[in-house]
Each structure stands twice: as C-alpha cells, then as structure tokens.
Image 1 (cartoon, rainbow, N blue to C red):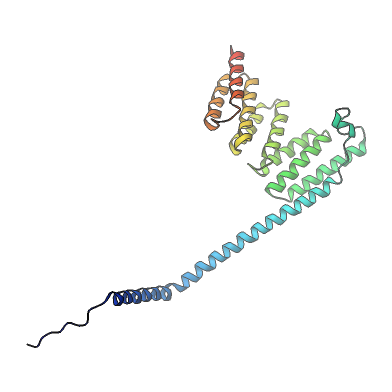
Image 2 (image 1 turned 60 degrees about the horizontal axis):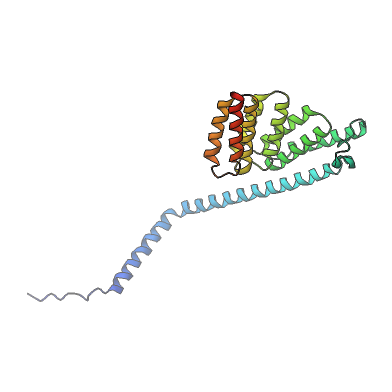
Length: 247
C-alpha cells in the first residue's frame, strides 16, 4: 500500500482568509437578496427626515409670523395713563369712547392672530387679547380669551399666567368648581415652582370653602412631590389655618 502523505498544514493566516471569504460571500448574498428592502428602508428614513425638517421649519416660520403680527397689533394699542404707574390714575380712561374702541379693536386683532397660530404663538396671542379685553373692562370676553390661552399650549410658558387669571375670574364669580379644575390642571401639567404654586392656590381655595380634609390630602400630595421645597412652611401654615377654622 502506498503511503498517504498529508497535505500542507493549514496555517492561521489561511484560516483567517477562509473566514474572511465566507463573510464576504454571506454579505454579498445578503446585499443581493435584500437590496430592495434596504433601499426602501433608506428611502423611508430620508422621507421621515424631510417631513420632520419641513414641519419644524413651518412651525418656526409660523411662530415668527405670529410674533410679527402681534408686534403690529401692539403698535396700535393706546398708551396707558402715565399716572397709572404711580397709582394716581386708572390704566385707561374708559370714559373716552375712542380709547375704548381702540382697545377693543386691538383685542380683536390679537384674537385673529391667535386663531391663525398654533400652540405657543396662539397661547401668547390669546393671553394678550385677554389682557386687552380686561383693560377695556370687558370681563366676559377677557375670561373667554384667558380660557383659550390656557388650552392652547398645555404645560407651556403661558399656562400659569393664563390659568391663574382664569381661576381668579372664576373665584370672583363664585364658580368654585371651575377654579378648582383650573388649579388641578396646572398642578398636573406644570413642574417645579409653578406646580407648587398651583397646589398652594388650590389649598387656599379649599380653605375658603372650609374643606379641611381636602387640605390635608393636598398637603400630603405637596410633600410627596416637593419634599425639598422651601415653601413647605406655607403648606404647614395652611394646614394649621384649616385645623383652626374647623375647630
């Protein structure tokens, strides 16, 4: 029988080359088999990127247009009395029909801007409209505009300003339940100092209503959410007042 001579030994370099070749073939197989799906995925990503970019640009342009429109309306506002800042005269002379008419036109113009805007720009325009209606002593239109500003951009920078004023209007009109709803929404939608203030305002509302049990629950919520707040003393004071009033 003839001797069998083994072939040349396989070196580590040959093994690496063979492995590299197999990887290349597997990659080529994947590319040839799934190139259509790959192109579709890339196309989808690019399309989504384009949509997001265009949407962001549109919102930014809309915000700029809204700001420019509000600046134009502001220039039409009648100047308040110079003595008003010293507390020596009302902000506006409501006995002057031309002055009042100018305020009403400006308020309506702010509302027009708000209805053509979204979220932040809309909230700001509604808030300006509400403030201007208030200057004109039209509290009904003012309350409606504050409500629109509050709903336009929940959790935004104008939420507390609009909501607080709306809640005050409700309280002054005796609409306690509506005021409570506004305070609760602000406490839920906002964070930090403003959420704290909303809870304190809600506790104050409950104190006026003589609801001591509700104040205890709200105080517990405040401590759980804001355990390091420097305003915990105010919470304790409201609790003490509730106990004193209840007794």
